[in-house]
Image (cartoon, rainbow, N blue to C red; front, side, top):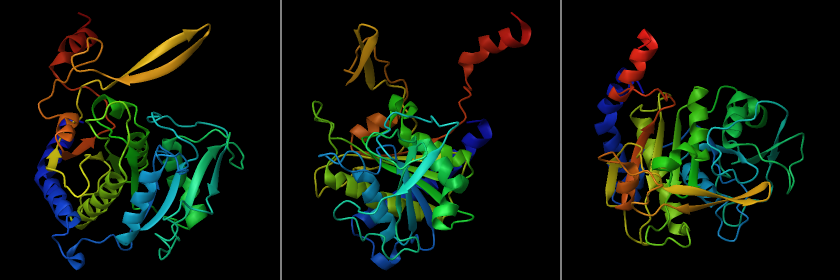
Length: 348
């Protein structure tokens, strides 16, 4: 992010934090329903990287998406889902550059979510996107998260929902697990949101956290998905009311785990941390390598430490909702580049 954009983001910080605080108050029930900002008349393309299947026993392949759909429609938005046909976690910003993509509507939605958007103009349509000429089946390769957004904005929504000049906003998530620190680089949830702003549409990424005290079974509680979605809908409505939608950066929101009935400690304006959270292992089996991963242990020599003062992951672990602006501009702007710049410019 260049200096001008950075200053613009910093100037908006106090306003965004006010939006966050009001979103928390509304979520906690302290604001009357008729005083809450509305999403009425807003067209939202909803995607994720976990898929739209929600078929796994723990519902990690889409429950957050259906909770977000429910909350956004309840706030008055017209929501259309175009999401990966199958799980694409870790896909980052990867996109399909050739061939064919199929958009297949889901007829029977997961139990409990069928009527959430029945009053919306689009009827709350849910589409899965796969590669090839279709139909999408159990073994059909899935489109990437970025594919679903680019397709939706580039003609999919016009063809399927009649949105000739939409959507007004792209929302991705709510993700199965947080997207903070090093994980942001691989996140398909964030990658899809970055694809949206690249196509000229503002985007918000929502993420639901695991219980940080449990390291052997990473699960997102049902109430965490729901609270993430409710918070996200109020937050987005607050952004809309203050004309804070932008294509300069993605707004990445991470909601913490907390016990049912409790609330987050607050909202923190953060930066993406430098800490490496997950390390991959490659185990040789002849010419084939099995890929596995594990959480980085604190102070592990092969895991990069945190170097920032107020990183997203640390504040999320302390129970705060974290809000982080993420720019697609990967140009490094700092003193570390002085030697390289001298060499490039002057050959010395």
